[in-house]
Length: 167
Image (cartoon, rainbow, N blue to C red; front, side, top):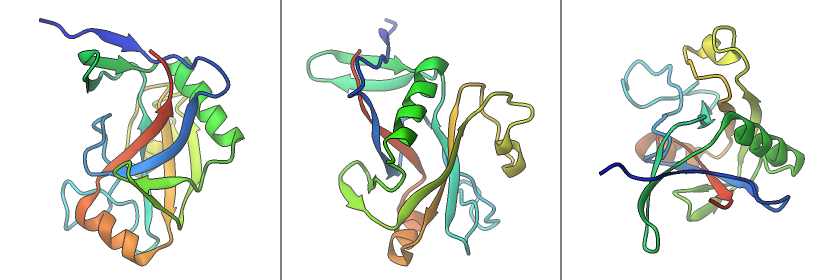
């Protein structure tokens, strides 16, 4: 049986992303970028600079969910909704609001750059060897805490947004 698919919608000005989490298993199944030749699957933009780059949201990507009330289902974001989420996130100044595994708030991380992919052939992410569909939200984060950086290297692989939304 095919699971239902629900489109995420922003109900009002109170909905959007208010925090980004550093996680072991990103729901969008996209890991951040690596230039570390010693780790084939573990992806870092730059070991010395402690930077991470990767997709924050990808349009029309089915994201599996299992809820006690709704059961199993997928959610998707349209490119238009992703662009609105990114706008609200930036407008509200949330670049320094982070946690790990959606539980522990962390400081000393900042989203230094983020953008919406407008042309996958000429997008800035190509300079890092990445390619995302048009409408994806991509971010570059700087980790300034050495202890957190070590935790990231040992356990974490990607970004996950914390979204206040409705189906």
